[in-house]
Amino acid sequence: RSGGAWASVLFGDRSPSGKLPVVMPSTTKDLVAPGKDDITYEEGLETSYRSPVLRIAFPFGHGLSYTYFEIEHAWVFVEGCPEAACVKANITNMGSRPGREVVQAYIHLADDDGIYELKAPVLRGFYKTAELKPGELEEISLMFMARDLSVYDEGAHAWRQR
Image (cartoon, rainbow, N blue to C red):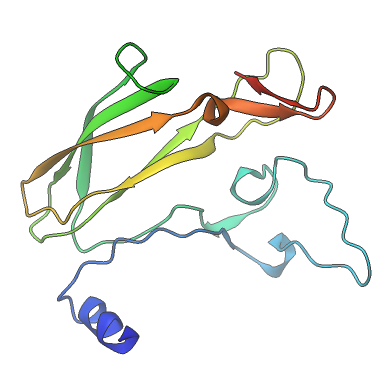
């Protein structure tokens, strides 16, 4: 089955729509090398796509398509949202071929009280559209629970909402 799927993408019958779940480093120096016996994780929250020092060839969440999409009218709301916060947006296929898009929602967690040192935004949600024909629009909704808007405080052994 996978051979047919690969062929349909390579020959243009289907548009790819996946996104990378990992970072592809630029060089071997940008890899996290395992140790012989013990591995010490010293990077804390600044691992993978959040690292300020790794050089990246293809970032986390990168993906290609045979068409392109426009995200418009994104808005955040709390009132009427069944969770802590919601986001709605319109996704339009602006290309000449049908395709799907994976919309990714990254949140910047403010560090007002010095609990952590994380400068990069954090992926907290995503949504894959239906296959959209050229010019077709889909309104998407993302919901974020309180924990999605939180960071773990090791000192307090608890989640703290940002």
